[in-house]
Length: 198
Image (cartoon, rainbow, N blue to C red; front, side):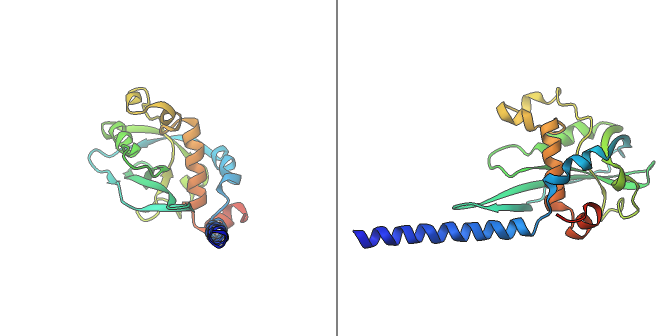
């Protein structure tokens, strides 16, 4: 009985150590988005974007980004995208809906696309660097849109409880989306160039 108890503790210790190492690897390989999220937000402005009728490319891809290793699973975020070309700015823009991956829930992007679908313009909050940089705006590297004048009241019934706090365009959602975008989606090279590393 005593030997099996010691073996159990050693096994639990090994699992905990492997999880800690796994999480350390994920921590070391990602950007420190939380540190620079407010700066990114402060360097953003509202602009009017023009939606081309019937010419949006919506991707509800199965891809997700692993953010942590848990006891018997992984923690992931889902990044759905709505891509369109603005003929006034002559650039591609992409509305990213970034949220924790949850099973058995409606993707928030499916609600967001319903709001954009019949509009001619949206008032979006865009980072000034990304709006003006020639490195952004191609189909391969569109200008990211993490917030716009989403008609939350119209779709309020689609959310319940705590979900409403993190509904697209709400302040808590926007700040978290910026943190996740900077941490997991921006390349390490660009992050270092713009924010001086960690």
